[in-house]
Image 1 (cartoon, rainbow over the protein chains, first blue to last red):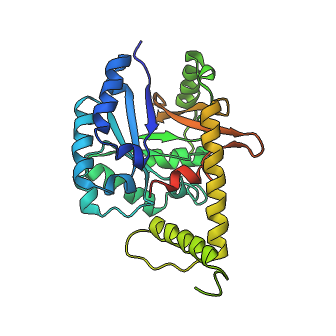
Image 2 (image 1 turned 135 degrees about the vertical axis):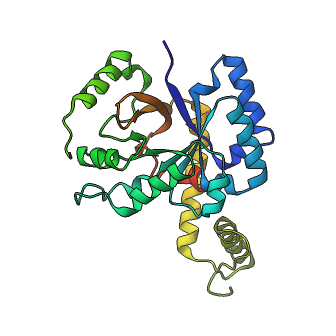
Image 3 (image 1 turned 60 degrees about the vertical axis):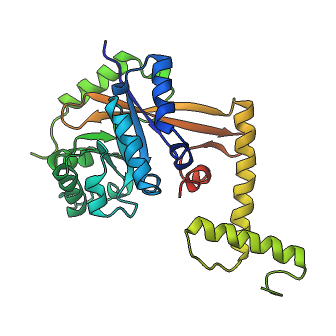
Length: 181
Length: 108
């Protein structure tokens, strides 16, 4: 059975450690975990501290299949040119942009623009903080790739997430009628 | 600044230190005057940091929770985000907002 990828938040001091990438790769070696099953979530501020070192470190991690996500996207101060040069795989749009989604029927232009910007520079988009069906449907219509939020699953200890539970959530979602057509 | 921020050398020096830390947190090249709010936040952080260290030593207050991430169209699960939960003996379970402001703040 192919495993499920696990995303881990990395703090700035951790990322700034000398040979952070090397340490991560050693842990993969030690545990036998495939790189593709690991996702490291970093914030814009973390990556902007030392852009040259960040770029090298990230390149090394991505070579081994590790997915790199830019967390809390939209809350920092990244310039667009920096963003396009940044070789992360995923932009995680901060939950603050989702809160108003679904209050009106149309998706706010801001989140739609962020998603098309991300796609334009070749990144996938994960949207955090999805709490209602309306939000889910609106995000689907604007091409959001992946979603996370209380609507689909709250954080829970691992034993709760056995395979039948996950299958069930999937089936329920797929069969749910579209709110917007 | 004497005498608003302290009547004695030790108090002035201590408050100046606090203002310096606050300035450093805000970024480079800053001027920062001391305020009592700043001191309160600083003390609160210090207390939380101590308690977090204690929690790390004891181990039983911290636990992992996993939140699933799904493909928007197929509903297929792609990822679990691993999140740490701190079950504080007095304040209860904390997620990100207030208590975890402390480790988060160190990032910036």
